Image (cartoon, rainbow, N blue to C red; front, top):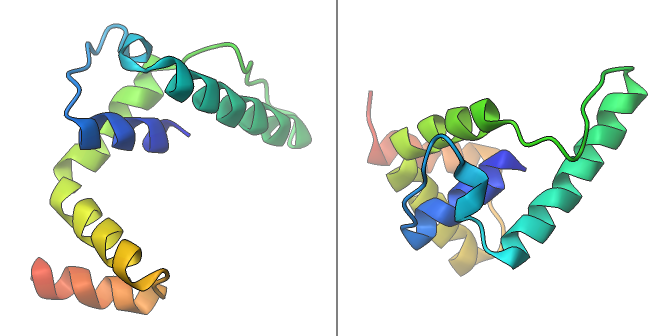
Length: 103
């Protein structure tokens, strides 16, 4: 997914050129990302949408990067908790985030 690939680049501290974000991916990341896009194409086909798997949508990447970058400390916190616990319920994630980032 775009969010997964963006998350990996953020975690690795990779600088990404917004004009060609896919170029920042390693061969392994590019391969996994291509498989995700193929799955999204099959899903889109079931609802009669056109979504070619070989097309990279930079706008989707940039939007995922904008959303994740703005919440990156929270993403890291949830990821670390998942690593420690193995699983989290949605209500526990909500509690964690509300405690860490009160409105």
